[in-house]
Amino acid sequence: MKHFFMSFLSILVVLFLYTGYKVRPFFPERGWLAWLVTGLLFFVMLGWHGAGHSSHFSPDSNVLAAIAWVGSFSMGVWATFIIFSIPFDIGNLLFYVARKLLMVGPEDSLRKMIFSRWIPLSLTGLSLAIALLGLWQALAGPRVKEVVVAYPDLPSGLEKLRIVQISDLHVSPTHQRPFIEKVVREVMSLKPDLIVFTGDLADGPLASVAPSLEPLSNLKAPLGVYAVTGNHEHFGRGDPWIQELKALGFTPLINENRIVNFEGVPILIAGITDSSGHTHYVEPAYISDLGRAAATAVPVKFRILLAHDPGNGVEAEKAGFQLQLSAHTHGGQFFPFNLLVRLFKPIYKGLNRRGSLWIYVNPGTGFWGPPNRFGIPAEITLLKLKG
Image 1 (cartoon, one colour):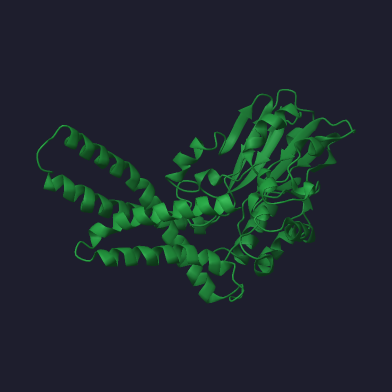
Image 2 (cartoon, one colour):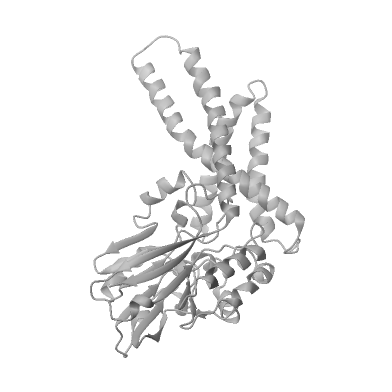
């Protein structure tokens, strides 16, 4: 934990200094004002998250909601601006070094003006536009996406199976009970045979978000409603969140499985705790254990794995699973992060094949942090099987 804190602090300092460097040209005669603006920006961006975990605000506080919306929206604009700025600054730096090495004459004042004023202003406008459009998409709520997964040897009868997946709800001061009520209505309108939730229920103390989670108790399906933990459940003690899932009518799969029958076909539904659990838990029960989750003495004809992180595909295929349902990445959540996420997660969105295993990655039914879904809509997934 100490190493994590030091790494986080170091990155934060670098980002603060870089942001201050980008802000300074807007205040050419008052450098101190640039750093004051940068400090206020970081206070707003970081403060909303702390306020959401504070006991000084009630869950339905208008003040808390205002702080959360302003802080998270500012974070989205800032993050997009920084990502857009880095390539231009690298190019500018390389040009400067080349000019020095080649001993070219004085720096072109027009080029300096372009890179110091015009480009930052243009990128600020572009970042704000993306944030506003992303906010509109986020407020529109999740869309329903139908996905058909083909198996040449699919057991007869499973073509009728309707699986609905939701994930990464991230209930917080920026999306509360009305959001959950809308999700529940959409899910139930699909007439699912099986409902699965693949982690990250909320952000904030359980006592604060519990009233917003209550509508989830209306999720019902003939084969059951199953859930696994995500990394956000591991940021605190997992037991209260698991108990909350049970109270809502979910069946949490903590490195275990259940066998259900559909049209006479036995199906194994397994779930593992998030693979980050070992960094947050000391109890062995919460360390991800795919072998234990897959173990059964009962013959089954189809195996489904619920795993928050899509990176479990190699082990899942070896364990004999045909379908893995995951999430976690948010598909990058908004442009341009949807282009960057693939550098860290080769399987980050949609339907993917790994040998005999199909992996579907839900991009999230809610959103985390910035209320921005530009280019990556939130999703409720309806999965069907085809022989």
